[in-house]
Image: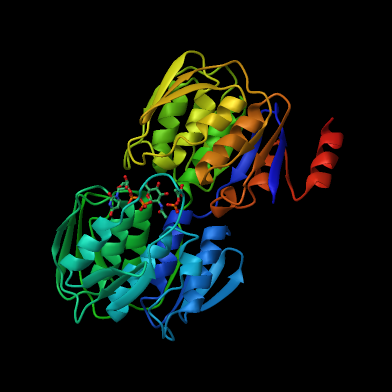
Length: 430
Ligand SMILES: CC(=O)N[C@H]1[C@@H](OP(=O)(O)OP(=O)(O)OC[C@H]2O[C@@H](n3ccc(=O)[nH]c3=O)[C@H](O)[C@@H]2O)O[C@H](CO)[C@@H](O)[C@@H]1O
Ligand SMILES: C=C(OP(=O)(O)O)C(=O)O
């Protein structure tokens, strides 16, 4: 099993290029099969979740032509199967987007209940409520969600919780329904806007994405497009909090600074300096960090997908910080691993109470999920001594060439495959 081995203590310094947003890309890839024309998608991140979704799309008959690591051409004209294999679905959450896409185009979809990170109970009742409101008959049978309709008809849908997945899924299906749909209490995340822009570039008629009311006028068909995915705000935030934890000076390039405001506000509060450029943000954290409080919320609030990474930095801040996780109930599993590195964090329900410590010390730790794994890497980069992070397949779900990008910022980190490689690293770094 691959591991990351890290010799901590080097401040991260330099520039790092941020890739396309995984969570936008997953939905956009699924939506690409909604036309029979060929769609070209650029700035695709080369990460495991994307590759699994592309395989699932090929399994149902989509033609996928990866022209390079970050560009793909998709043609959905030969899709002959509306039932997606459990083999793919259990490995990723976003497989549920194939439901909205297939239902919109073919009025029929069978997709197993999705997997993804084990960060809470993750119901999909709001997705199904939306599909039913559009006129689909939706059943759960033998572990599959089966959705069918003679016709989809526009409807007025109020989401009981702000859900990124439900907003996007309903938006996709409604794009090819008859008549008008209104989604109220919609999610406003940048990737919701990106998916709406993508669908509109294929001829959909979606207005209001980025606000909490989205209006969709259904169209009969969608057509070819060429589209470039927005930068990944979570990957960018991860490098920014890594800069803070290591007292570094990092410029994240190819970002949309507006999407990073929750992160930059917190970095300013804890004593870092921020310089915002047109498509880059520089984070300088030369002094000791100060404590602060954080509560995760839907966009524009602080993202739950950045909660573990800021916690890893706050564990090194002077004083007490409180981090409240209000989206997923099981997203503090990494705290025990941070404790093994010397962090002083107590979890009570959905709150982590952090007493800052002077330093982490290296240890062997295990990633419980994607962002938690990234947080453990951040702690390892800041720690005295050597840290070994196990179960990095979770990290590889969402970070492209993570070790390589960190090395370009001066980190001593390597991906190792076996005990021999680990020993070699230890001997080399001393
Ligand atoms: C592939 C992808 O894009 N994943 C992201 C997406 O997940 P995902 O789309 O699964 O998350 P949601 O925004 O749907 O979940 C938000 C909250 O709503 C609840 N809920 C959601 C749907 C539903 O039908 N019923 C319900 O109760 C969830 O349990 C959670 O408490 O948004 C999350 C919140 O920003 C991110 O952490 C994930 O990285
Ligand atoms: C939780 C995440 O992904 P998923 O919803 O696919 O599990 C994430 O991207 O942090």
